[in-house]
Amino acid sequence: MKDRLTISSDLGHDGDGLVRYRIRAENADFRGSTLAWGTEIDAEKLADVLTGFPTTTPSSLEYQFGDSKSGECRLLFQTLDHVGHCCVWATISEPYSFVVAGKFQSVLVCLTFTPASLDDFCAELRRFESGKDNEASLKSTEL
Image 1 (cartoon, helix red, strand yellow):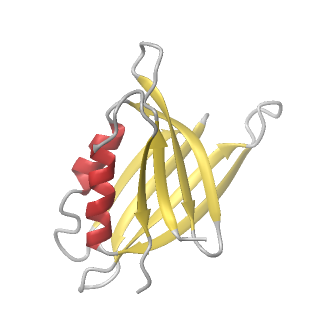
Image 2 (cartoon, helix red, strand yellow):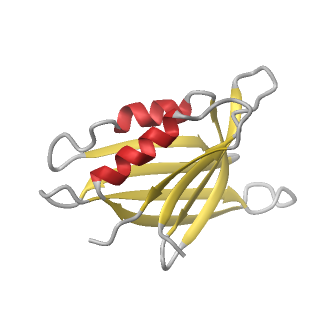
């Protein structure tokens, strides 16, 4: 299994502008995924806020998809040291069962990466188009 954070969506909606994103995070020890609501431009917005990260050391940046009632992913990007090594903490919650309302599964997954792999991830996020099978993966690097 490759350590990675993956965001995918076809950006399809029924006129309200809300779309579902599938966010998956996995490393050697943990993995989790959720379907989270967002807007058509959330992938592009995430790429915009991540452009040039990190600008200083230490640095951190947060972004969220979804909400606590229907599926959520909170992403916390951080620097690890002064030479450019970074990590992302993905806090994922997913409804356990629609039969048992209010019950959620959750996981906290950490992935390390370099700014170069983040640049590739942002480029993939910017290519998201409505009606296509879009996917962007931030691949983890060993530090």
